[in-house]
Amino acid sequence: MRIKKITPKESYIVRHPVLRSGRPILDCAFESDDHPSSIHLGLEVEGKIISVISALPIRCENFPKLVAMRLRGIATLESYQRQGYGTKLINAIEKRLIKNKGIELMWLNARINASEFYRKMGFKTIGDHFTIKGIGPHQQYFKMINR
Image 1 (cartoon, one colour):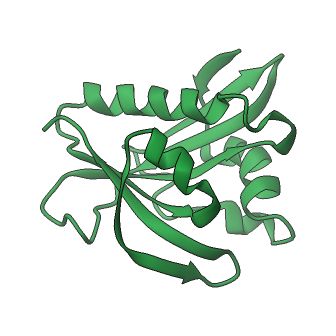
Image 2 (image 1 turned 180 degrees about the vertical axis):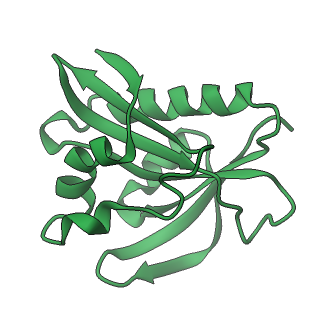
């Protein structure tokens, strides 16, 4: 197992079946994927990327004065889920963001069924549940860093 930098398009092999199944592959592209400050990591097992995460330089409406990175596309292929790979990727991206002393906040919009996972990772909720059309109910989470 190893964690490595990947391109946004390399993340599609996991983003698509886990997060955008049944939708066009272009739905896997996110705003700011290609921004120079964006970070994309893949967790590789036996030469195959099985889990991905992206950190994108997008400010959070709830903390407009903080320099923030939005976590998106956090996904693990179904047969590898619940084995700690998502935890490893979040820890890896957090370490990278902490090294960048200017980043103050990590935030994300998570599916409701992943709520417990993010709480265990030290994220706190903010605001009410909301629904993303075609995807389902979500909750916003945040975690302060370098503060």
